[in-house]
Image 1: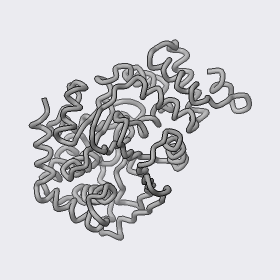
Image 2: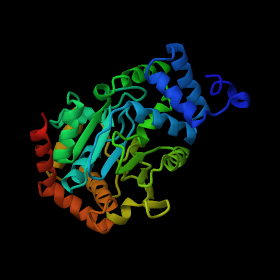
Image 3: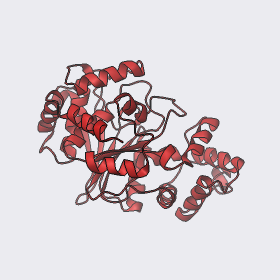
Image 4: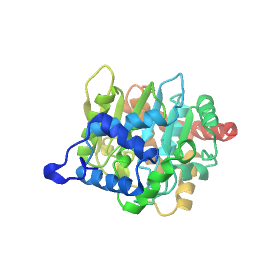
Length: 335
């Protein structure tokens, strides 16, 4: 607290080991409530450095159980406080990838501050897949069988609930809200997909990934900080592969016939009806957004040779029943 809370002139950044130690003390409740709340708000005002974020992730790695997989995994990092303005297609994208043989994992919790939007777990529940009650072993088994997993932190890492309480009480997103975008419940063979809103946040992502030895990732300036490509504007995308340096991709939806308005989020009931219709292959505005996103990610993960082929394949998978079949498989395999 003395280092991060002393103001612009006398305050100092934490070292990576110090950030790891502070995070452990918070998660294990070794710090007092007053210290934890003060640290969170002071750290937010100061803004975390890449060294500090790396240390926080080190603490997560040492405390949170790891999903084991023998195949490369795609992990989506989206804000845990959900969506409240635009309709998400991330679950549809995940189903497309899983159906195409690209194992995919999401992670998160329930409705929380500061947005109190619709969380991903609630959407999955509405689609007939309730990841929340699954044990860690059951989650791992479902991922292995279907290529789709959801790491539900309130069950698999109970100390997470306390972080949610502090987040609500301080009324601001603490640096832990940045961690949720670049953390993975899997440790090896991971391709991170991280959503962001502000360019400085992406810069910190890149620096943190470098410190942690992460060489495969994609950053998306997506809808509400998610990994969803917006049809209303040029998508700003960062691409890093193991064998190449970081590259910038500006994806213009009008170049591929997907330009349009972002589909508004009106209610959870309407959203679920829209998503079900897309999975059933019915034409709609949300279907176009789903094809746009699914096609991009099919190309990004090497299923299709170019973007045009990706968009065509995504449409074929949705209208031909492959995505609906994958959802049915996940429901059938769920304990």
